[in-house]
Image 1 (cartoon, rainbow, N blue to C red):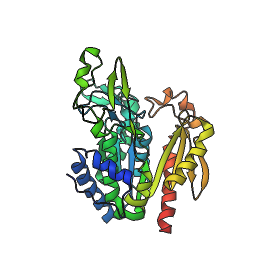
Image 2: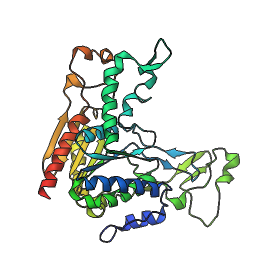
Image 3: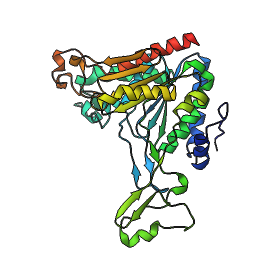
Length: 359
């Protein structure tokens, strides 16, 4: 079991209950060991460290998981932002949903473009990069090699919401000695609900009425959170405890905390972002709307109030990477498309510098 240093002061009841009642992931020891070495290395070199969370979290309905509830997120925001933090001279811990987009390889992911589309076979039978993509792939590869050479990028995967919460607490504890040089960029889409360990069935939930007895168990045990009721699957989820305030007050009290608020109703965006800022006492809440999140976001902070960050209409990219410049909706005759994260991250880094100066 990984040794968990407890945050200063008494932990909130919800935190205590959650971590007491839900088992730590098997991977926590390895995650903690890798992160400790990474953080210590960059702390010794006086380099800022950003923890970037990315992708969605699953909520398993069974211990031997077949069925689960998932969150909508491919990890685009997190993976793209991680690259721009590296370009801003941060070391980056990338806590990501397993199999979601990754920094650098995102340009050639199956969810954007199949990497085989960038390859061709030479007359002698060798596999090479197509001449049309040489410059583009070379630029990405050089940035990736620089990150590796400087030991500046640590990839740590998670799958379930339970793994994410255990990892977040462990990493925040390890980052506490960084003080103001630590930054949390919480771009992951974390589930608001979960199945407590004591209410999770062991085996696959049977959908056929002929086998519903298989979902039974000890009559004295807690009622399963997911079970068949006749022909219907009934799921009773618990709310995930809100640890965002604990992150500020106890886990990482001197680090800069940036969180995200996704909405679908434009009339609620600013109000909900201000509410989150006040409730969780973060330094910055970045609000975004589902349909416009790739080209505009709203910064809400105690220091700066409200500020919109927008990509000009003529420079909005349709995808993460276009296979050919001329395929980018006439982009060959326009200016190069801009990823909004290239505008977000420098603003965040500027705010971080101001916070460090004050501290």
